[in-house]
Length: 193
Length: 336
Image (cartoon, rainbow over the protein chains, first blue to last red):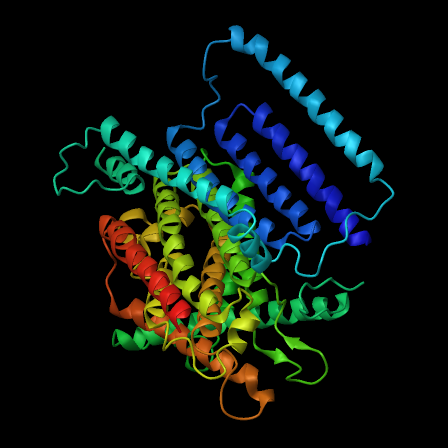
């Protein structure tokens, strides 16, 4: 048990430090990297909750695919310390207000439910809880409709991204009639410059 | 303390797990030097040269000399570099590469008596574990290349990023057919499902896609664009010297071993082979060795691809083919 407790505090502190780093670090490259650290810590927390599949999916999809693109773009656009916009403005005043209210709400919800559970051992779960098979079964039976809706949404987003990329770059009349994919294009432009 | 295993997976004591970790580590770090000399010798033969032949009998002690040379070299970095990041990226790459080896099964549970399973760990998420650590290796390339503060390193890092993302999709889909046929993601269960027929026969297309994408994932020739020496000096590890450079080299060989190991477990029947069950690890090692020879052979045979060829091959040929393979496998599984 000691090892798990130790891991919990390491992962918890890692997640907090990562999340704070995203907001507080000015350099976008380091900011993105601390988001990666945050996501990996979250995966560790999932692992402690016996949600192996969730932990693996978290690493493969977020740390391994989504954040890769973030790092890719930020590394290109620049690791400068310059602020993105002018100081001040209305957003700067309203932002902390919203953050404070959200924090209060979340704190009430978390403290309210977790104070009761402090001395209990948590819910009893079956041996196959969190396994890929179990999650797959749930997705195709109980959560079929939300699952399909989410996949449809992703499809729409992917098509939308292609349409927007074509418009922005004037790819209406490509040479070979096939719009090429963006990752390759980014690199080719860099080489031609 | 025992680690909890889900679904009847093997539960082992901490002590056994530590011993296993040490065995895997020791084994890999003694095999990799032999692989470097094997590769140099073989490539020499392929190119009508002798290869290394000065250190020790027939040049077999060459890795020792290389390691000593690398260890005694000075660590230098350009003025534009970020030193701490250059220091951690070799650590990330070696750690992720070695961790992947934990899931490769060398034999069934109890092959050497007792409850001992001849694998590091048997996790329910087996293949996802492989992908997770494979994708984390990306950060080593990008951090190393970005932190070097050099254009060649940066271009190499960006190339490896684009290449890894592109081919990871194909490699995932190629193994999906195997996972569907075996009905599990656990590598041990996948090997157990191949008692009658190795998956290389029903999943031949998947095997081909996996091997091609495996070459791209390990950044080996003909997909070694991240470090193509003719254009980028040495790509993301241009600015690394001494043992830090050695770590990248080490990790590349470990990745070859782990990709070969996963291919052995998923397609070539893992520990299945003639003879008593206690010989299981021998068969696995033989199959892995054959695949490593294949890796070296290809490097000596094929020229490097052009960058746009690499991208269009990955997205326009491999990905549709892999998707089609998954689709046909699913239909066949439902019909039969």
